[in-house]
Image (cartoon, rainbow, N blue to C red; front, side, top):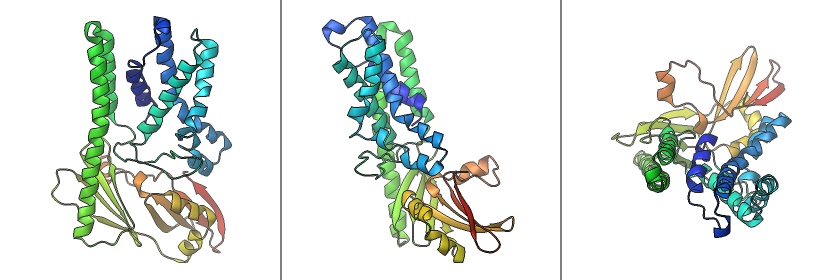
Length: 325
């Protein structure tokens, strides 16, 4: 979920944080508001790993320890301590609980996106996901913004708009999860009807509409992809096959490839010649641009994000590898 939307979920939640009667002044409420906004964005400080200029390290640590429910109580000390030092609120327990709430809101909000969140790090690197919302969901974002603005400029009914905003936030998250479950059932039914042997099935949200979904089916030979509306009668799969040659066989044994094939939810292997070099490229189909958008915008060769590329020279020697470039 993007940071603007994270901030708005915190802004809504801040209206329902109860402070002790002795700390109920306007200054305390303002401090709690800004602490919650700061804390809800704190987990994304994992972007600092980019300073090491190692894209694989960056992707390995993205949504790792800073997004762990186990480490959250420890990390909450940091924003709480900062606000304790620079604000007039000297109730550290209140500040710590507020910071912890913000971090947990962020963690569980990120669960709805397909990338995955390592909730149990460092004990487990499993990426948990509900896959119910696209990374940027404009309906959700502008819906939250509308209720925040209504609460600000309609003072006579401020409490009403805040409650309605909270209801909208919860209802939207629950509703899109229900749509995801239905989309997943549609994909499973199509797989069953076509008697497809599969390793993994995913139903992923597509941008711009909560009713448009992508179905990905991992098989031994590659990935089957379907893009559909929940109102479509049938699903049509596109059969995308793994490349198979001597270069691919060598690449699959490389340590980086072994890691990436385990990291990717739906890996697909390509093999081709470029500028007298042989290229083997592995990318995760869950991050590929939707076919309908590629066609809509006339993109001839869409860039595949999070792609791991191996380059072999004319003599068949591995001359280098790159990730997400």
